[in-house]
Amino acid sequence: TTLLYTIKFEQMVSLRYPVALLVLLLGCSGDTLDCYNTKCMGTDDFNATSIDCDQSTSSCGTNSTGYPTCTAGTPGDGINCTHTSPLDYYCSSNETTGAAICSFTPEHSCYSIRCYGTGAQNASFIACDGSTGRCTSDADGNPVCTTNAGRGPGI
Image 1 (cartoon, rainbow, N blue to C red):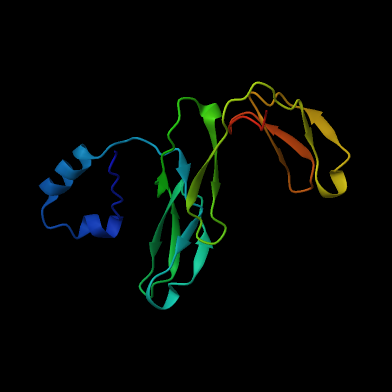
Image 2: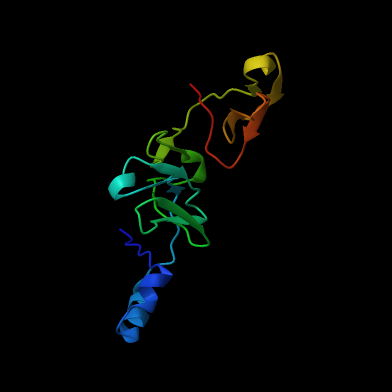
């Protein structure tokens, strides 16, 4: 289990013992997580308030009133997925809280070979090897074969 620490600049400035900071930083792991949260939650009067925040490149905080903030530069919170290959899973998140979810794609014997569009683009399709790619669609409903986000469904 990797223990990750997020240290905000304001907290570093107020540290009374700079040596403790050095020891803490040397003990921190540089490991990345597999899937990251996508929202920041507020506190106090704003505990039901959330804002979108890609925590693979940004981290969450709150301002003095408890309103959530998203600061670019340092990865935030997420989870690790139990896997042996990048094809074993893809990342999704809870629509309400933004909490990261590992969606697993078990290995099968046969896979689909096409991706189909959605909505007005539901008659369009593209080739996609489901053993190494997963079908999604873009904002217009056009089919997309994603090869870096797990394998597709199979039987």
